[in-house]
Image (cartoon, rainbow, N blue to C red; front, side, top):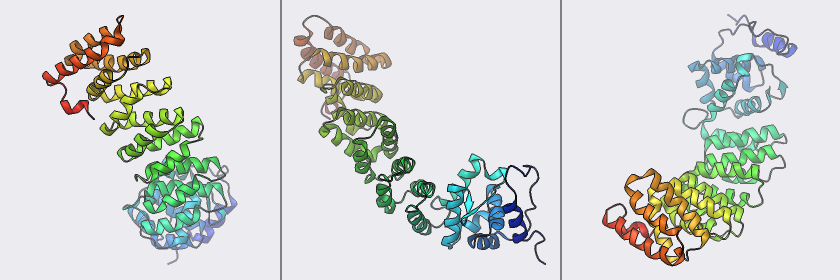
Length: 357
């Protein structure tokens, strides 16, 4: 027996009625058509079938989710991307019920692209790579976002190209997607984009570098050493401070002597986030470098912060801090720092190798 609420009848209702004119509590009946049939018809452009299929997915009905996640139809995937991006289906206006207009519902549809739990990854990659070249910015931006969710290294090229997209929103999506890629190969691309970026774009790049976590550390350390721009050094040190990887200690300690005051203070703040791990390297720096007023400020800030948090270190560090602010500290500080470092080693609070990172 034919489904009483046939797809073509429902589609006529949907195309003739706007979302504003239909009360949210008065919706057409869902019917009993199997989700696999709905998915097939939705791939062919039926908005009625798509409406019912997506509504079932928003309710987490297993068969509806399976019908989409197991599909091999590229057109269904393309229509789904269009729905997420533009709110249309197969190039036609698409009136969504209230349940499908919420932030939760939109996210639920995006999760259909998650690897291992949604649409086949290879199928999704093919479709999204194609859509990422669409003439419409909304489609490109959504494709880039979903490629970031997939997190496949194969999409690095398309994401890199998207950094040059004429639409700012698409470029932002590319920056965020590169951060979600989870691959160290994305780091040089993001660092290159950081050059010339304004504060807003730089903030997104910073977040992506932090999201890449330990994979970003080697490139960030190298950039701190070689970048001529204080803004670049400042941004890279800030990211290292968030990641808190021991490999960044040396460049952060040397950053206390940076010729740019803002960079030096960012290095100090990052070392504070490292906690007692930073004590031995900072003391070693004080034994080897000239005790300039600048270095006294930044090193004192780090050591005082550790002293306040770590009671065991307090007697040793406070003695040094007093000397650093006395007249003649330029001569005395290196000697006292060496003495305090030796005492901390004898007390077992630092290891000899900690001073030589």
